[in-house]
Image (cartoon, rainbow, N blue to C red; front, side, top):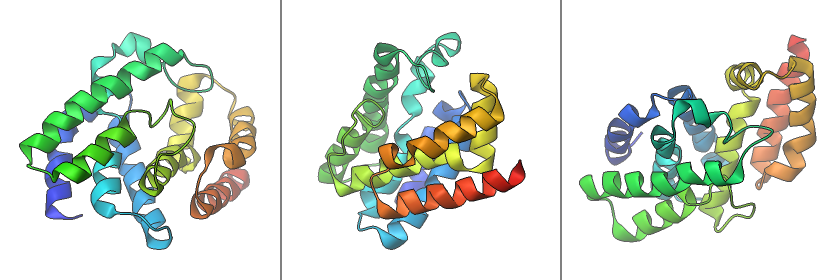
Length: 187
């Protein structure tokens, strides 16, 4: 990871200590790097957006968080983490003196990374795919089916059905299907 991205990550870390976001960001970041290998995107936008996209959960009370994401969620409550995340990410990017033009796109991506169903740019497509791929990783899958209280096989079937609906890039769809093949073998 580049030095500027590492600095952003260091500033973000304290805000990732909720909702297992520390694990989520680690896995999503690995997927972002994989996506950037084959999908055209600007790492100086994608990587900071991935690092910062969920820091706004820090401002949502933990007892309310499960109502704001997952298979059944409250749209208004989910929106809170995006709005708060934009404010917090803006502060972090200002502290590290990040380039203004790139900061603007990063904040636009964060503001709607879950609630906006369409992508606003190729960079946003990559961020959205990296974010969703967490659910398909063995660790993310286990975290999510347990925290949502969904039977493992039912959750896996739901993920199978969601690939074409959720993913924007060919690489994202391919990585999701590869991860599902691994999950299918675990049963």
